Length: 176
Image (cartoon, rainbow, N blue to C red):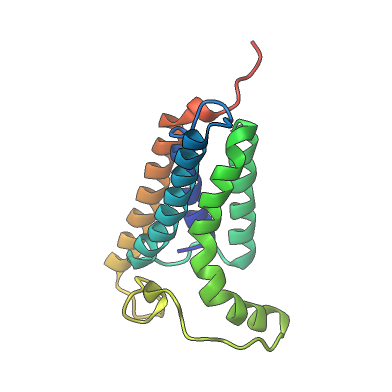
C-alpha cells in the first residue's frame, strides 16, 4: 500500500496507545516503565500493521508525489490536533508503520528517483517478497481485483478514522 495508508494506520495505533499512558508526565519509575511498555507495543503493532496491510490485495492509488503529499497531510493533521505530550508516542508509532518500507525500499527508490548507486540488499520483511505481498500490478489484473483493492483501502481508512474518533480524548482542547 502507499505510505499514506501505513501512516494513517500508524497514527490510529499511536493515538490509541496515547489513551493508555499516564495522564501527566511522572517521575514514578513504575509509571515510566508502563509508558515505555506502551510505546514499545505501539511501535511493534505499527510494524505488524504494515505487514497486514501489505498482505491485503492492493493497488497504488497515489503516485510518488501524491503519496508524499497525502502522507504529509496525515502527519500534519494528526500532530496538530494532539496534545503536545502525546506527540512523541504517536511519532514512535508512525515510525514503526513506515520503517519496513524505509528499510526494504529506500535504496531502490533513491537509486531510481535520484540516480544514486546505493546497494540494494535482500528484503528484511517477509511481506515485501513475491510470496508475501498483496500488491497487484500489470494489465492482467481482473476487475474483481480492482474492487478488492478499493474495498481494502476503504476499510483501512474507515477503521483508522473510527479509531481516531474514538480516541479523540487525547486531542487538544479548544478554548470555548
